[in-house]
Amino acid sequence: MCACIRVGSVAVGPVAVASDQALRGAAFIPVQLTRRSALRHIAAAATFAPAVLSGRPAFAQLPAPPKLPASEATLLRPGDAQFNGYVPAFNSRTVLAPQLRVLCRTPQAIGTMVDWCRDYGVQFALRGRGHCFEGFSESSSVVIDTRPMRKVTVDSAAKTATVGAGASLGDIYMAAGAHGLAFPGGSCPTVGVAGHALGGGYGFLARPFGLACDNVLSVDLIDPQGHALRADRNHSPDLFWACRGGAGGSFGAVTGFRLQLHSLKSVTTFSINWRQLAPARAAEVLKIWQRWAPHAPVAITGNLVINRHPEGGVNLHCAGQSIGSLAELKRELKALPGAPRISQTPLIAAINDFAGGVPGWIYASSLMKGKSDYVTTPLTDDGLATLMEQINGAKDVYVICDAYGGAISRVAADATAFAHRGGTLFSVQYATYWTDPAQTPSRLAMLRKFYAAMRPYVSGGAYVNYCDADLTDWPTAYWGQNLARLKRIKTAFDPDNVFQHGQSVPSAASD
Image 1 (spheres, helix red, strand yellow):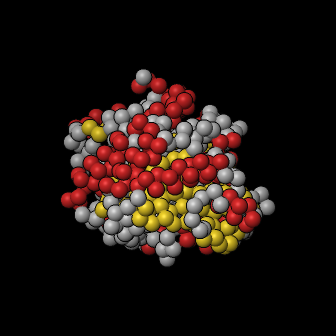
Image 2 (cartoon, rainbow, N blue to C red; image 1 turned 90 degrees about the horizontal axis):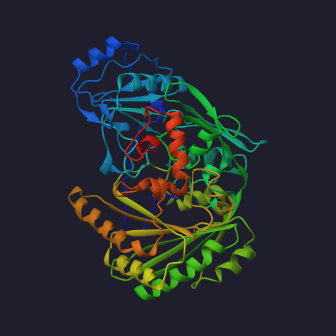
Image 3 (cartoon, one colour; image 1 turned 135 degrees about the vertical axis):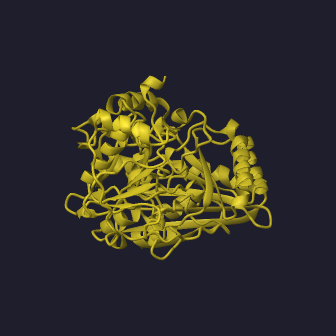
C-alpha cells in the first residue's frame, strides 16, 4: 500500500515528468571514458575538492563520465533542456538535483556507470520511479536512473511477466490485465516495481496471493563489479533471498524481474464510512476492525484509514476488495458496524478507484513525512484511546491500518528477507502532507509526537518501504531476525559497500 492516496482535504499537486519519448530526443553528451589506473586516482585526488559523503568524495566537478551511445543512455546535467523534468521526487522535502543524471536504457549502461562510480569513488543513487519517503533514490552527485527501462512482456500461458526495473506498478497492471491476469502489488500505480518488490510490497491482493516479493521469480541486476547476473532459487540463492524484502540500493542495481501473475479479471470492492465520531466511539470501531480484518477469509483484504474531521471528531474509512464470492463478503462485513457499499467491478477499474481515479495516474510530488509500525498483539483499550486522542488533536495526520494474515503469514519469517509474517496482525502507516515549507518543522514535530505516544502499544517493527530516517535502530525494526543473514550476504557480495544509502543494509563488519 502507498501513502499517495487522498484523505480528506489532503491534495498532492501533480508534477510533470518527462516521458521516455521526449527523452529519446535529448542531446547526447559525448565524453571520454577513462579506465581505472593508479595515476587516475592520484590525479582525481589532486584535481577535485575533497569533501566526504557516505565515505566517498563529493566532487566539486565530476571526473569525465564514460562515453555511452544514445541508444543506451542519455546524460543530463543542470541546464540541459530536459534536466528539470526528471528532478521531482515523491517527497519534495528530500529532492536533490544531481550533477549528473544518467537515464539508462540497457543493463550495459547501468554496468558501465556502476563501474565508473566505483572506480572513481563517486557517490551515486539508484532511481526507479522515485517514491522513497526519505529520498534515498536522490543524490547531489550522480543518479543512475532506470526510468526508461519500463518494458513489460507478459507470457499468458506461463502466467509470468518480464519487466524492466523502471516499470511502474501501473505498467504491469495494464499489461497483465490485457491477458486477464493480475500482479499483487500496491494500490498506487505510479510506484516503481523495483523499490516496491525489493522491500516486500503490500497491496489489496496480498492476503490471497502474497506480497509482491513472494511473486518474484528472478531478479536481474548489476553487481558491484559492474557485471550482470541473475538471481533466483537455483542461481545465487542467498542474493535472491536478500532481494525479496531486503529493500533496494544495498546489493546491486536491479535491471529487471520475472514475476508470477495470477488469473483475475474482476473483484468485489467494498467501503464503509464513519464520520465525525467521538474518539471513544472511533476506538470501538478500530477494536472491531482489528478483531476482524487480519482473520477474515484470505480472499478478502481490507484496510482502515483514520483522520480528523475538519470540525473535530474522527473519520474512519474501511475499504478493500475480495476475490471470493459476493455471499461470503456480505456475510463477513456483518462483523463491522455500518452499511457497506459493495461493487463488483473489473480489476483495472478497482485499481483506478483505489488510486483516487487520477486520469493517467499522474506522478505527484509534495512535502511529506511518513512513519510506520507493526501490530502483533491487538491494541489495548489504552492503545486505541491514545491513537484516537492523537488523531483528534492532529488535524493534519492520517493513519492507515493494513490487514496482514492470509498468504503473507503462510510464508515462514525466514523464507525471504521480509520478516513481518506470522503473528503480524496489521501494519500502521502515519503520514502528513503540506505545501508551505515554513510548516516543515511543526509538521515533523507533530508526527513525531504522535508516533512517540504509540510506542507502548506496538511491536517496534517498521516497514522498510515506509522508510523513516528518525529510527535509531532501523535495521532491527525493518528486518528483525533476518538482519544477521542480510549482513552476511552484504559482506560477501558487496564487501566494499559500493551500493549504499542512508539506510542500506550494513555489513557484518559494522558489528
